[in-house]
Length: 148
Image (tube, rainbow, N blue to C red; front, side, top):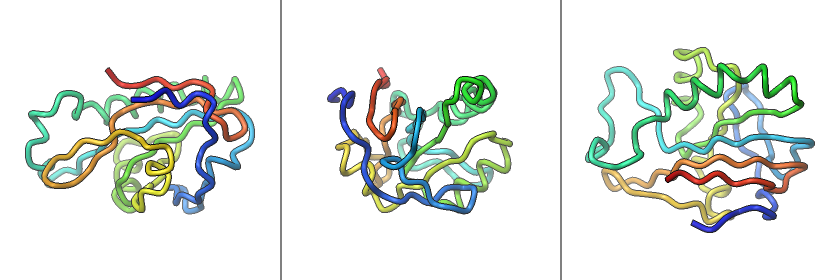
């Protein structure tokens, strides 16, 4: 995966779980984007083959950990967003069940991930984003932490 530091974020409006859109390219100041593959729902099976994919599991604890640290990020003037290819309704359910302190952004149309050429993997014939975290300042990636 190529390092995205120095890349401008895509100028796309992404629907957020807070009921409005967020455009990462036009987000002023510092923002962290926690890119994750998938969050499950009680009673809904994971995609076929999910358990055999290294790094596939872990979105829930990762997002909960960021949520626990959300106030500390805010103290330093950093906005926090999660981002996946899942639709907003699915994400809203996850936010409500886990009491997340920050919004999730839906890239269900794939415009954000396509523009940045974000790495994906396939499970059950569906693509999912590889986990990574971006720190952006005024819509430009300054630091890119890729999953290992």
